[in-house]
Length: 78
Image (cartoon, rainbow, N blue to C red):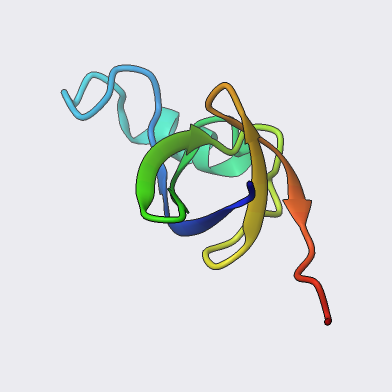
């Protein structure tokens, strides 16, 4: 079952403790490695990594395996 992306944030190593300086956050924003999304699986919300999908945006549907979004899923035109 594909999940819909509800929100996206950057979560560099060190979390919100302030350990990562401004340069680390800017670098994380550039490469997309630390992008995390809150996704909805039909009422169940989970946090997943978007490291493999730098093009993913809020509202996209994604295929998730073990906490990692692997591919975008197109809506069925039917």
